[in-house]
Amino acid sequence: MSTASNHHDEVPARIRDQRQGGPDGLLHAMDDTDGRILWSFQCGAGVHTSPISYEIDGEQYVAVLAGGNGLPYPDIPRGDHLWAFKLGGKVAPAATPTPPRKRNDIRAPAVTGAVAGATVTLGRIWDAANQRPGASENTVAQNAMSPQHLRVPKGTTVTFVNPADNRSAHAAVSFFEYEFDSGVLMPGQSFTHTFGAAGEYFYNDAIFPQNTGKIVVY
Image (cartoon, rainbow, N blue to C red; front, side):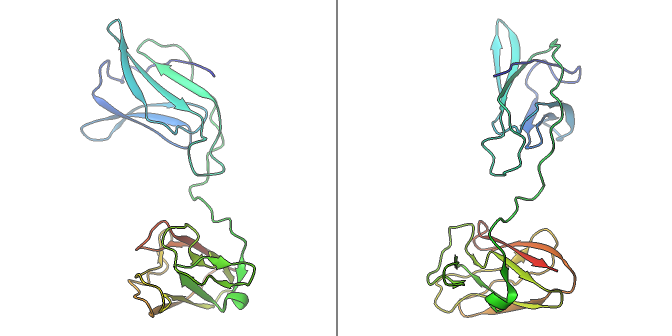
């Protein structure tokens, strides 16, 4: 475990700022009145804990762990660092790591539009053994889209369906590209969208937002 300290003249000597770390390794101190960034420090690995402030003999310290292993992304820069800061510190920042991708990718195997019938069944987990949507509704699992990773050619019309035997409303909303929004689909309802451009389209269930999926158009 490594330790270090650093300072910047703009960082207040007493707590009047908010501190926040990110998966890119940067720790920021922000003005608590307007959110303006006052100071940044590269910790060398994803900052996955909340910074703490403490006092020894009247002197204020700020400490944070940077390891990257508590964040749900596979490409977060990893490390084993405990950083402690005080005014007057001299240790330089760590080297800037390769930043993670902004999207936590869907890693489920692709299912072709031909196999899935160009249809995504909401609230169901894909039955890979039988190449079809699962038989029961699931509102908890991240992969409760059947299939979670659909691959179709450009020009395909994809149907998003909430099966009639589901008990809950569902929805499919493209949250990066704003390509489509099904609105609320009650059991038995469906929505269609034609993909006119190649790309990766990420979406989630607006009713159960932990349920996520991806459509790759080629």
